[in-house]
Image (cartoon, rainbow, N blue to C red; front, side, top):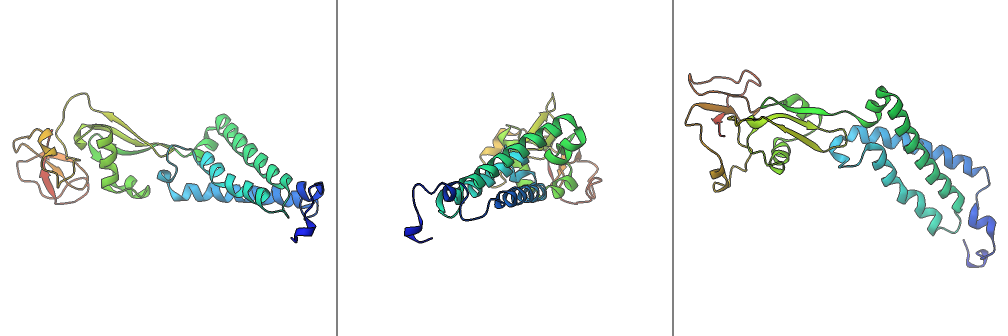
Length: 229
């Protein structure tokens, strides 16, 4: 717009902008479609993209700046369209949350569910692949929970909102070390199993060292390392 077209008392431009009043309906349609597209996109990106936020909260957070910025900075855009978009985003968030509260199937579709990554000391490689996780990401999660070998893990869950939950075995069990292999000093916190057990480097499955194992019965890997406690 030209400078001489901007007047402080021009309330039509301030509230609606240059667009016709019908544009508010288009804003509603655009916001609805963008919200649905973001919901699908966030589910496809995977759980770790969410951090501690739920899918719905992440969508709203990402769209707030895009919703507010044009109405605040562009003189040919009205405030009502931005306000309507914000109300729509809030209504969608509250509405989908309420839908998930009342309907468990809808909640699973919208929020996702917890995924088991380690079960009874064995890494579930297929679940890791589905959630696009590496071994080092899983090991880092265990270390942050002060768990230093896979055999000690009863369950490791990847929650629907992207965080890890660790449930430990009540007693010490031999298993695959999750400590960085290049830091020899830190490995002194482990106790050796004195050659009694070996662990699969790929899935963490722990078996007796004798007789000498062949392929891992869980993942068919032939890479074995000494198990630790």
